[in-house]
Image (cartoon, rainbow, N blue to C red):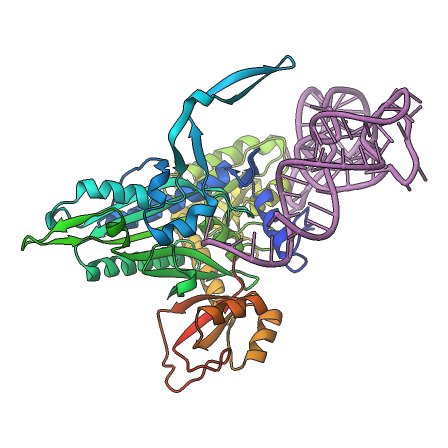
Length: 494
RNA sequence: CGGGGCGUAGCGCAGCCCGGUAGCGCACCUGCUUUGGGAGCAGGAUGUCGCAGGUUCGAAUCCUGCCGCCCCGACCA
C-alpha cells in the first residue's frame, strides 16, 4: 500500500508539493542566512551532472573556462546606465576588511573595526559583466585578439526579497559566458548559437522541452540590446525562464572603453555577448517530471541511475550478495550505481526512499532472482516489475534508461504542446489565464505600457516572441486592438 | 516591502483560550525476532518551547519588540 507520507499532492497545493518533493528527496537544507540554501549531496549531484554536460558543449563550441573575482569595485556597477538600474537594488556590499572583538556587559562579540573601512566598498557580484569588461579592456588591442570566448562557473549574489528553493535564492550557482567579437554579426551569431546549445541540452539531457524566443524590451537583461530565452512550461502551466543569452551590442565596450584596431588601423568598439544558466535548472527538472510520489529524474542528470537492493533472509545472505556484487561489477563504470545494503531497513522501506529520491531504475535481487539468473526491475516512471537477466545486463539497463529518458521527454512535450492556448479576444484571454493551465498565444501589437497593463490585470507576462513565427499579416491584436506585429506567448511565470 | 498564517525533540504535531516546571506519532540508540512494498516486541536517549525584554511567587501559555519560514501581492533569473 503506497501511502503518501508527507508529500502534498499537486492538485491540493502545487507550491507545497514542490517543497515536499525537495525535502523528501533530500536535495537542500535551509541555512542560517535568509534566502541562502545548502545544496546537499543529492541536490549538488544533479548540478554536477548539469555542469559536466554543459561544459562539454561549451568546449565543443570553442569556449574556455576562466575565473574572475567575487568582489567588484562599486564604481564599476555605475558605468553602464541600464545595468545600474537593473542590479543596484539587490547588491550585497563589503564595507570593511576586519572585525574586532568587543565586550558588552561581560559578553564578548564582534563588530566591524572602524579603522578597516574600505575606501571604496566592494560589491559581491550579481553578475560579472563589469569585472570582465574591465579585464577585456586590458586584453584586447587588435582584431587579432578577437574573438574572446570565455565561460566561468561561479556563484553570484542577488539580494532578492522573496526566495524559493532553486528557483530564486539570494546566492546561487551558475555559469556565465562572456564573449568579445570584432563584428556585430559574429556576436549575434554567438548569442544565437548558445541559445541553441541551451535548448538542445535542456531537451536531450534534462528532458525539458523549451521554447526559444526573444524577450520583450521590458523583460530584457539590463544592458542588453537583445535577450534570447528558453522558456519551459511547468506542470501548473507557469513559465520558467530556464536560460538566457544576450547580445550586448557595444554597450559594455563603450562603458569600459574597449576598442580594437582593425586591419586598416581604425579603432572600433568591441561587440559582446553573455549567456547563463543557473541552479534554477534543477527546479525546472523537478517541476517538469516529478509526481505525487516524489522526485523523478531523467537518467542523464540522475546522480544515481540504478539502485540495487538485495533482498534476503539470513540463510540466503551470502548467495544474494554474491549476485549483487557480480551485477554491480558489470554495471559499474557504465552507469551510476548504488547498492543499498543497509541491514537496518527492510526492502519495502528502501523502495519508497529511492523512489522519493527520483532514482530512475531499481533492481531487486533476492534468492528467487538469483536462481533465475536475473534481477527484478522497476522503473521510477511506472509500469510493472520485470526481469533483467544478469547475462547481458549492461545492454538491457542501457535500453531501459534510454527508454525512461525518451518517455519523460515525450510526456513533457505532449504536455507543453497541448497546453498552448490560442487567444482570440481580451475576454477570452482574461478567462483563460484564470481558468486554464499553460501558455497563451497572442498576435501581439501592444507596447511597453500595454504589457504592464496586461500584467496588472491578469498577472500573466509576455514570456517571449518565439523564434519560430507564423505570419501576422492582416491580424489585429486581441488584447489591444492594435495591428499585430508578432506572435507572443504570455503566461504566469516564476 | 504590504496582507495573511506559522515557529514546542531530527521531522510532523498536541498543549496556549483558562499561567503551576512539557507530551504524542515517526525517526534515533540497545537487544532479540525479522527482511519479495513503509517490521514487531522490550528497554532507552533527545528540548535554552524562534530570540530579547516585560507582567507574575511562577510564563510554552499573557504583553511588547525583533528574527525566521510558508502562502498571496509588488520586485526580480
